[in-house]
Length: 151
Image (cartoon, rainbow, N blue to C red; front, side, top):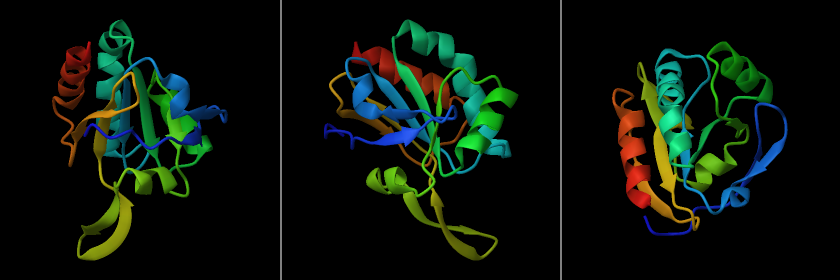
Protein backbone atom coordinates (compact mmCIF):
# COMPACT_ATOMS: atom_id res chain seq x y z
CA UNK A 1 0.00 0.00 0.00
CA UNK A 2 1.19 3.50 -0.80
CA UNK A 3 3.28 2.28 -3.74
CA UNK A 4 2.52 3.34 -7.30
CA UNK A 5 0.07 0.90 -8.91
CA UNK A 6 1.74 -1.01 -11.76
CA UNK A 7 0.60 0.62 -15.00
CA UNK A 8 -0.78 -1.51 -17.81
CA UNK A 9 -2.79 -1.45 -20.99
CA UNK A 10 -5.28 -4.28 -21.63
CA UNK A 11 -8.12 -4.82 -24.10
CA UNK A 12 -11.63 -4.25 -22.77
CA UNK A 13 -14.64 -6.44 -23.47
CA UNK A 14 -15.24 -4.11 -26.46
CA UNK A 15 -11.77 -4.92 -27.81
CA UNK A 16 -10.41 -1.40 -27.24
CA UNK A 17 -7.20 -0.86 -25.24
CA UNK A 18 -7.53 0.75 -21.82
CA UNK A 19 -4.50 2.11 -19.96
CA UNK A 20 -4.61 2.48 -16.19
CA UNK A 21 -2.72 5.77 -16.56
CA UNK A 22 -5.65 7.19 -18.57
CA UNK A 23 -7.74 7.10 -15.38
CA UNK A 24 -5.43 9.32 -13.31
CA UNK A 25 -7.32 11.97 -11.42
CA UNK A 26 -10.01 9.60 -10.15
CA UNK A 27 -10.03 6.59 -7.84
CA UNK A 28 -9.94 3.18 -9.49
CA UNK A 29 -11.35 -0.09 -8.17
CA UNK A 30 -9.36 -2.85 -9.83
CA UNK A 31 -10.79 -6.24 -9.01
CA UNK A 32 -9.18 -9.47 -10.16
CA UNK A 33 -11.38 -12.55 -10.48
CA UNK A 34 -10.69 -16.07 -11.78
CA UNK A 35 -13.30 -16.76 -14.50
CA UNK A 36 -16.29 -15.29 -16.29
CA UNK A 37 -19.76 -16.70 -15.65
CA UNK A 38 -18.85 -18.93 -12.70
CA UNK A 39 -20.95 -18.80 -9.54
CA UNK A 40 -18.73 -16.75 -7.22
CA UNK A 41 -17.33 -14.51 -9.95
CA UNK A 42 -20.86 -13.73 -11.13
CA UNK A 43 -21.94 -12.85 -7.57
CA UNK A 44 -18.96 -10.53 -7.23
CA UNK A 45 -19.55 -8.82 -10.59
CA UNK A 46 -23.26 -8.37 -9.87
CA UNK A 47 -22.49 -6.90 -6.43
CA UNK A 48 -20.22 -4.32 -8.08
CA UNK A 49 -22.98 -3.72 -10.66
CA UNK A 50 -25.56 -3.16 -7.94
CA UNK A 51 -23.21 -0.81 -6.03
CA UNK A 52 -22.17 1.01 -9.22
CA UNK A 53 -24.36 4.11 -8.65
CA UNK A 54 -22.39 4.72 -5.44
CA UNK A 55 -19.06 4.35 -7.25
CA UNK A 56 -20.30 6.73 -9.95
CA UNK A 57 -21.24 9.34 -7.29
CA UNK A 58 -17.71 8.95 -5.90
CA UNK A 59 -16.35 9.50 -9.45
CA UNK A 60 -14.54 6.15 -9.23
CA UNK A 61 -13.79 3.81 -12.13
CA UNK A 62 -14.50 0.11 -11.63
CA UNK A 63 -12.53 -2.43 -13.68
CA UNK A 64 -12.83 -6.21 -13.58
CA UNK A 65 -9.77 -8.23 -14.70
CA UNK A 66 -9.49 -11.93 -15.47
CA UNK A 67 -7.54 -14.17 -17.86
CA UNK A 68 -10.65 -14.69 -20.00
CA UNK A 69 -10.80 -13.51 -23.62
CA UNK A 70 -12.37 -10.32 -24.95
CA UNK A 71 -15.18 -12.42 -26.46
CA UNK A 72 -15.87 -14.18 -23.14
CA UNK A 73 -15.90 -10.83 -21.33
CA UNK A 74 -18.31 -9.35 -23.88
CA UNK A 75 -20.79 -12.21 -23.32
CA UNK A 76 -20.42 -12.05 -19.52
CA UNK A 77 -20.84 -8.26 -19.39
CA UNK A 78 -23.92 -8.32 -21.63
CA UNK A 79 -25.54 -11.28 -19.82
CA UNK A 80 -25.39 -9.50 -16.44
CA UNK A 81 -25.70 -5.88 -17.70
CA UNK A 82 -22.41 -4.90 -16.07
CA UNK A 83 -21.94 -1.09 -16.29
CA UNK A 84 -18.14 -1.21 -16.13
CA UNK A 85 -15.44 -2.64 -18.43
CA UNK A 86 -13.92 -6.07 -18.09
CA UNK A 87 -10.26 -6.36 -19.05
CA UNK A 88 -8.77 -9.40 -20.78
CA UNK A 89 -5.47 -10.36 -19.12
CA UNK A 90 -5.11 -13.51 -21.24
CA UNK A 91 -1.36 -13.82 -20.67
CA UNK A 92 -1.90 -12.99 -16.94
CA UNK A 93 0.92 -10.41 -17.07
CA UNK A 94 -1.10 -7.84 -15.12
CA UNK A 95 -2.19 -10.43 -12.54
CA UNK A 96 1.49 -11.30 -12.11
CA UNK A 97 2.48 -7.61 -11.79
CA UNK A 98 -0.09 -7.23 -9.00
CA UNK A 99 0.97 -10.48 -7.32
CA UNK A 100 -2.39 -12.23 -7.69
CA UNK A 101 -1.33 -15.00 -10.12
CA UNK A 102 -0.72 -17.80 -7.63
CA UNK A 103 -0.68 -21.51 -7.17
CA UNK A 104 -4.13 -22.76 -6.18
CA UNK A 105 -5.55 -26.12 -5.24
CA UNK A 106 -8.92 -27.66 -6.03
CA UNK A 107 -9.83 -31.25 -5.17
CA UNK A 108 -6.15 -32.07 -4.67
CA UNK A 109 -5.20 -30.65 -8.08
CA UNK A 110 -2.61 -27.84 -8.08
CA UNK A 111 -2.72 -25.18 -10.79
CA UNK A 112 -1.90 -21.52 -11.39
CA UNK A 113 -4.71 -18.99 -11.37
CA UNK A 114 -6.01 -15.64 -10.16
CA UNK A 115 -6.51 -15.21 -6.45
CA UNK A 116 -9.62 -13.06 -6.00
CA UNK A 117 -8.19 -9.69 -4.91
CA UNK A 118 -9.36 -6.06 -5.13
CA UNK A 119 -7.09 -3.02 -5.28
CA UNK A 120 -8.27 0.52 -4.58
CA UNK A 121 -6.02 2.96 -6.41
CA UNK A 122 -6.15 6.64 -5.46
CA UNK A 123 -6.41 9.57 -7.89
CA UNK A 124 -2.59 9.91 -7.95
CA UNK A 125 -2.17 6.29 -9.04
CA UNK A 126 -1.03 4.85 -5.70
CA UNK A 127 -2.37 1.67 -4.12
CA UNK A 128 -4.58 2.94 -1.29
CA UNK A 129 -6.01 -0.38 -0.11
CA UNK A 130 -5.80 -4.10 -0.93
CA UNK A 131 -8.55 -6.63 -0.22
CA UNK A 132 -6.96 -10.10 -0.32
CA UNK A 133 -8.71 -13.49 -0.51
CA UNK A 134 -12.00 -11.72 -1.12
CA UNK A 135 -15.32 -13.15 0.06
CA UNK A 136 -18.09 -11.71 -2.08
CA UNK A 137 -20.73 -11.06 0.61
CA UNK A 138 -20.53 -7.37 1.55
CA UNK A 139 -17.36 -6.86 -0.48
CA UNK A 140 -18.61 -4.16 -2.88
CA UNK A 141 -19.93 -2.13 0.06
CA UNK A 142 -16.62 -2.43 1.92
CA UNK A 143 -14.75 -1.28 -1.21
CA UNK A 144 -17.14 1.69 -1.63
CA UNK A 145 -16.44 2.75 1.98
CA UNK A 146 -12.71 2.76 1.32
CA UNK A 147 -13.20 4.78 -1.88
CA UNK A 148 -15.44 7.26 -0.03
CA UNK A 149 -12.68 7.68 2.56
CA UNK A 150 -10.18 8.76 -0.10
CA UNK A 151 -11.90 12.08 -0.72
